[in-house]
Length: 461
View 1 (cartoon, rainbow, N blue to C red):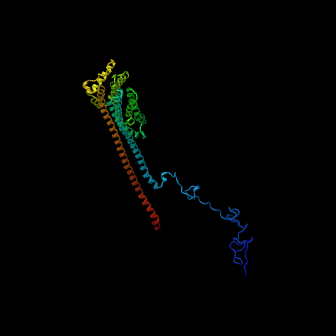
View 2: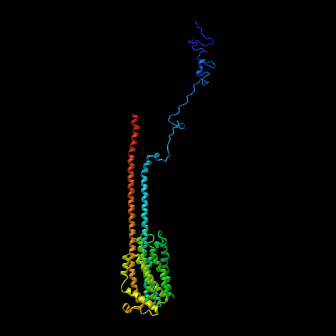
View 3: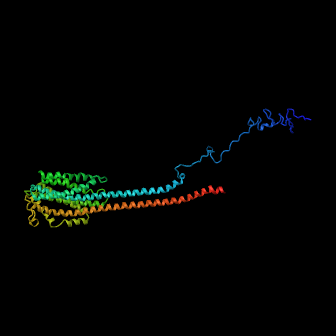
């Protein structure tokens, strides 16, 4: 017998459950067949009119914010770097080790290069002084030979250019001068064509010494081929040749910074002026005695007195600048009966000229013998000049030796500085390399151990 299904007033099954319909399914109007507008009174919790969603779905949960990461970078997976990329803490280990080696090495290299550069510069400067000192030795020698040529030429011209013996002396003097001037021209080319020399020194060499050498041929032609007077010849030789030679000689130590060498050059220059003063006196009196009518003109007398006065002034300067030993050496060397005789004869010639008397009687048979008065005076005064040149040659040798010593010392200093700098550079490089390698070994071992743990031990564990 079929059971009748029980329903409530609105078609709902009883609360205790209900039997299935004929095909075993739930009744169409059962509580699980929820449709629109059919929810029960308690349906508002999830899908009723009082729920948050009208579609019956649960409200999605807001994802949790990542802990310890700023909101703008949460979940981006980007690594955050702090500081500049050039900061030392951001350098790789390799670059740090390179810096350990490079910085001390470059510092040592720069400091060493400065020291070597200074040493080489000092050597170059001293080498230039050495070149000037060697050239000065030739210039001093050439100035003396030009003075001899000047005096002989003046006497030869005053004698009428017909004395064969005097002509031979002129030719001999010119030949000796030409040989020295050729050497001067050869060595001066190094100074003229090079930079680094003091501008005034180069100017005095080019416009004084070398220009005078170039003009010497014309000066000789004017003296021997024209009616050029003897006093004009003396003045031209002195102003155009000998004075510029002495000026250059005084320049060789300028700018060296060596006080001792500068003092020696000053003393030498004073002595060279003394020589020229004595030579001028020889020339003025020699041409007066060689003349067919021996006598000092007023112009020649004035020039002779000026040369004697200037010699006294230059002697005082020499004594003030020279050491006691150098002054004593000059006094001991420039002495003797012929020196005294030359001074006496010159004083006598001046006195006789002042009295309008002939000067042909100067000199005695004891000093001159059968030698003509002009030649006797020349030879007597030449002894004093030769003694002065002996002292000046010693000073020239002293200046040259000092320049050579300075050059050798600076070269030795440059070599020692270069060797020491190279050794220190190698030492710094070795020490920094050793320190860097001592840091690399632990890092390599740490890396190997870390790879071993990550690749073998940790997976095995």
